[in-house]
Image 1 (cartoon, one colour):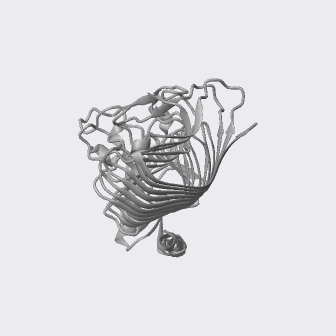
Image 2 (tube, helix red, strand yellow; image 1 turned 90 degrees about the vertical axis):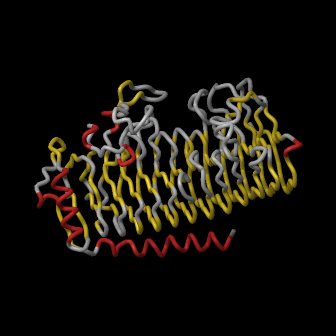
Length: 457
């Protein structure tokens, strides 16, 4: 795995060097096309006209000058056009359903479809005004507006995303703040050769489904130096209609009420050659997660140099404050089971209220996992009762179970080298723990070297 990691990290430096080239074309200021920038009048026509003029001229930058609040319906980027939101300027997403296309899968404030070399930059902010979509505020989870009247969208997730690139190549997003999405924040769909650098994402802590970056069916993606603070999954590769391969995420800071790095739950196709390096995860419900529930396979993944803390936020939420959560438990009884193989966890430091959860399934084994230089501290921060494992959604639900430093089932090949478990039991009751829990009939080929489990005050 070392050689692929070096290659992918070298790609970060090469692609970042290429980023300034996208900014060398002509500049088209939206003010020259009639944008008011007062936050109350819609500037959609002025911005879109500037985008189209820039594309017709062969590409360049479309500038939203500062200061200014530019209210808009969906803006469609074109090939070779970089949207530059200047520092001190904001692009505000409209809050009416009529501001967005008819099809719910195209509900984005900024949307690029079938583009090459499109991007976003400038140091300013794109804001989804999520507060306008809150029907009933809740410290647990807000009740939100649902635009399901078109029939194209069902349930309570019918809200606009912030930024989307679909079927696009050479995507470049850097030096921008994405804030207050009403639904997902940044979405890459079937894209190739994308760079996301120095992007700050701020979602409302109680807004549901406000994922940070979703990488769906996209390949050759580099994410670096990003700050993500949101209420739902932060970095989320998904394989819905195609595979995800060659993804590198490095030098990022994450805080989330859900899972910091999560594979799935869309997982119908394969994930291969993914690297997550030098990541700081703070106060998250889960740290590193793989929910491979739809038949796809995961292989050749490295998590390295990761520092994290996880904690409970509510006992009924999905997730039980695990630092690492991996399962192939199928979503539905007739779902095909995928496998997870050749995954390395190297140089991981964690403080958590729960243990590592590694649960393959009968036909979806976990194979050849390696834990090296791992320091796990278990510390109760809340009074929520322990002794539960969360298999949802899938073959089981919430299962009462002793808490394990590592819980193992359906695994073939697990190497543990220099792993330390530290237990800070404190005065809280109801914490029935065991360093290692496993079902012997489902486990083979285990290797333990330099493993410790000790109590601390």
